Image (tube, rainbow, N blue to C red; front, side, top):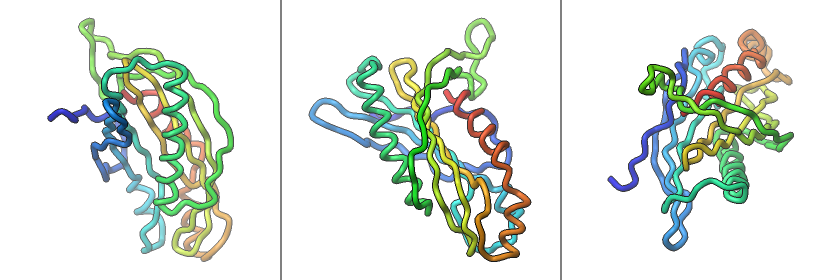
Length: 208
């Protein structure tokens, strides 16, 4: 089909489950359109370790392969536009998942190696990776789970590569602020913000 895009490839994700895989057209104006293939994962391992029956947002991450048609080589102006649109969409995604008080904290660039996440090899047998520069935005947010208020961190990365854009992001709980004592105690045992951040950035650096 004309809209078919390969899904982004990610490094192995132990304890994560893919919960969505969708293709859509987030933007269309005259002959120009944007086609996006998005996969979403949730951390099921953390869910099983918390003493709470209520469903909640937990940790999640997503990756999107975005293609502009007709083909338009990435430029600073185009990348700036994509970052702006992607940031608005990511904030909406966070709010739809129950995160509130979402606020942008900082932005920076990050050198990444993309293209090898799925273990693809080139003709020489090496990982088919290339270097690129990602625009990374960090957010702070609040989320409530089973009567417990949590502070959360979220990141969005936009990487132009090979005439496309790769969008990668996710959110995770950072600390317990208060609430139901039993649930709060079980959450404190499983919240590891440094590890959560490292795992998310491993995906950002290796998505392809």
